[in-house]
Image (cartoon, rainbow, N blue to C red):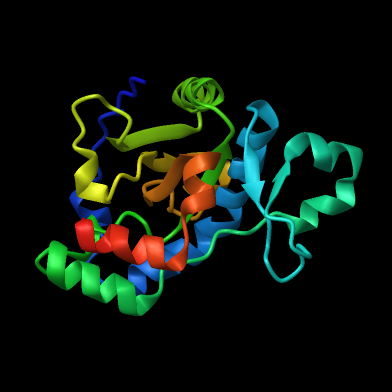
Length: 201
């Protein structure tokens, strides 16, 4: 799977230099990002994670199911902002205090039953005129050493969503994280598994 990033530059006067500023942007773009994820889901054969509080044990839902039953769209899990505690940890440990390097305050995962559907989604995202890909982590690449992530593999995209709304409120440069994950890996992903992944990373 090949994904190329779109090279863009953020003007110096728009660079984020505080967590407060970053989270303020995140709150503005969060609902727009969620709508974009649902739009992508309507164009590719993916599964959405179900909100655990209302899912009744159901873990995934496809867009096709929501077409048959529009009320079931309320089951789709919304993006959750990264905790401030984890954000501070990451800035201090990984980014030498540079808040502007945080690119996953707003994040989401789309799930796929096989690699073919995941590849098709990559092509749809790449060709979307409202999406700009700033960074790609392709853990399916043959050169990737899977021991770095405890055997876990996915494609992680840092993207900007640029439309009339995000430009109006000056959040079109805010970077969000989109994970494209195979269902077989998501099934194995648990709190313990995620902790192990963070240790390996």
